[in-house]
Amino acid sequence: MIRYLAALVMLFGSAHLTQAADAPYAPLTKPLHIEQVPNAPIWYSIGNPGIPGKDNAGNTSNAGFVVTPDGVAVFDALGTPSLGWALLQQIKKATDKPVRYLIASHYHADHIYGLQAFKDHTQTLIIAQ
Image 1: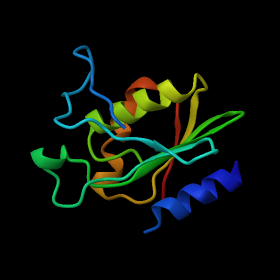
Image 2: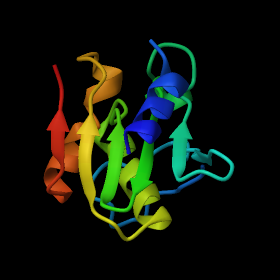
Image 3: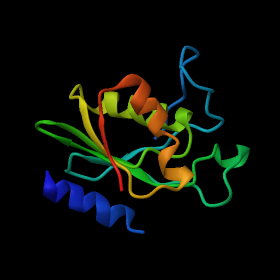
Image 4: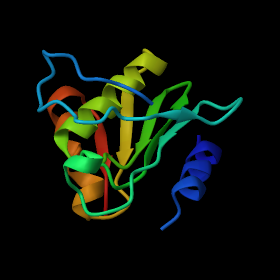
């Protein structure tokens, strides 16, 4: 697991999903794009540059997750509850294992406002400074 977490940290240094009508948060204006690292249980999303707004659906930061035998470790939660929910839905598509940990790299809004979805819908342990 540590090897996979190290890979996430290196990926994020310093997918397409449209939310269903019954999603608990506002719908995204752009779907969340998720990629998988080839031959590895690691998925990631790269944010869009610029100031958060309608053009980029507030998605300006990177995030990712690693599926381990014991569960899922997530790195950052993105910048809105809607984006956090979309990330959580992508995790559910990738595995039926529980989300065990969410590591928040730092306190900027574009990395933590998505925590609301994890708090509301999982028993995830949030690790932050």
